[in-house]
Image 1 (cartoon, helix red, strand yellow):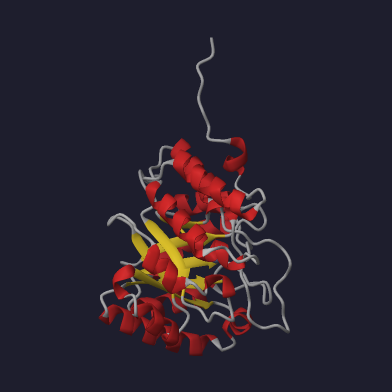
Image 2: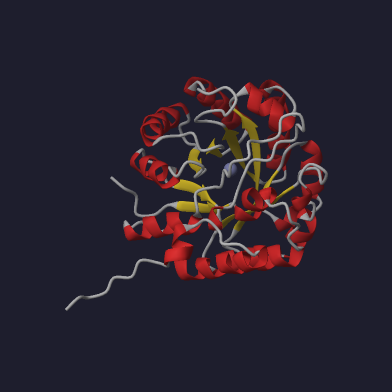
Length: 312
Ligand code: ZN
């Protein structure tokens, strides 16, 4: 049985923009976030409080949060890598609603991403979540490489469940399972989500797919079949996974998120509500296309929405 409605969190302003080499002006980011909200996006990952030298593109996190004017219905989320990031974010406590903390399921990816073992990440994340909860913030935990690791290959689903349980115990109400480099397949997605759901009663389970190998929508459909009603996506299929270890540069393949436009189009055509106006979402994406000076990856941006015409 498919759901009538799903939650969709737009992560383009963070997961999408963090991989763009050219600095995008703060005012452009702010206008985009406001357009996304006007299109009906009610969950929005706006930025990340990472070190400016690690990801210069998001160095304006505080300015973005200060400037955006959004309807009350929008829940603004920020990605928090560590306690120092939380300290910076809490200067603007009234400007956001949720924090997203993260770690990788595989040791090698975690070390190359944040330069420490998974156990240390879990300890750090637990402290961040405790403090964020004390501030009344909703907490989401993201597990990267949950379906496979570009360095280690297979990832043990029981290990992913164990980390997810630890995040829930720490205080995360929502767990996002990230297919960080697009290694998941629909059969795997269909079998893993019910297993994880059983291990995590009461938690909201979110699917975060990258379309690296063109299987993002197939995986989203498999997740729907498996009972998932919460998704993350990026307009224009933007996205990537910058890693901080210069000795191990990331693979030069695009690892964009599943495109919000394509996911919204598929869901609506299937009769599943998202609350998002696809036409207005396309307007928001086109504004970024103009700013970046290149076509973005979403198919529906090129083809336009499905329109049913009566044939004589
Ligand atoms: Zn991602």
